[in-house]
Image 1: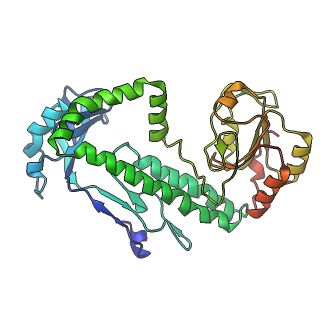
Image 2: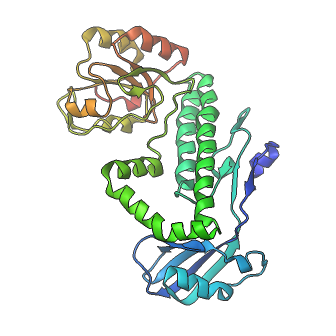
Image 3: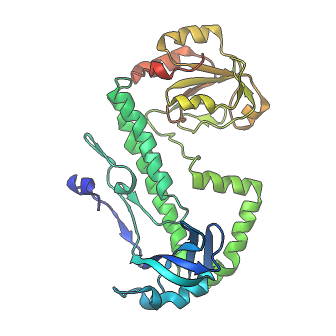
Length: 352
């Protein structure tokens, strides 16, 4: 229902799920702690605490016999909800039904107008990715708008917003759609798998360190990369232009301070990282740009995450790698900086 998207006459291709969903805020007995996903042969439900103790939010699929009803009340589905969730509802504070969509706008930009969040993409709640994706849009667009409007970046920087975010949105909609159809399938065979095998499979996944890391990277979206962006160049080690900067702790900065390599990212501005030693020639060549060079003493931990010793990484304000070069060749970085007219906010400069 985005007024802006409708005003731009942008298509919103996709579809609407056949299932009808309910959401209810209730006072309940036997309310579980934390977030609980209840898998059942005939569907699923989510139980999560809201406000004070004993108050919970219930979300789930309206049973098939009542899905077509336009005026369904909680009492109609109470027995089914209590059976699946295991809670006893004492009072209903609020109840509603709704239908979910899976759609991505044809474009995220038309001239001077940009779409972000639900205006550009909507999908099922499978994986809890909606808010993260909207915030990701805002972060991606925010620093680019600030740079261009502040005269610290060529307007072409804004051309990268739609390609970077719309590709991820389309992939996310496809993935969540596949997961969601399995979770909500009315097939008896899938229902048995969902109720008895899926919980065990999830438990095995998160019990394994590699599996837990994969699940975390997926849900947190820290695995997002913009390798095909016009702003992404080169590779050094396993880190390529467009990748999110790998996190490394236990580092010693050239100024003697100890910590991790994410601390300098608080400047929210362009910067260069070297894991090893930044040569005097390299520093001198880039000094006129004003872009800070953060050099960290090399550690095996840096190599484990894919960084290369003495390589240079030009980082965007959002923490993604713009340029990665194996050798400290200032010409490659200077050319890139000139191409996109990159200037930094001098008030945000960190230690050199």
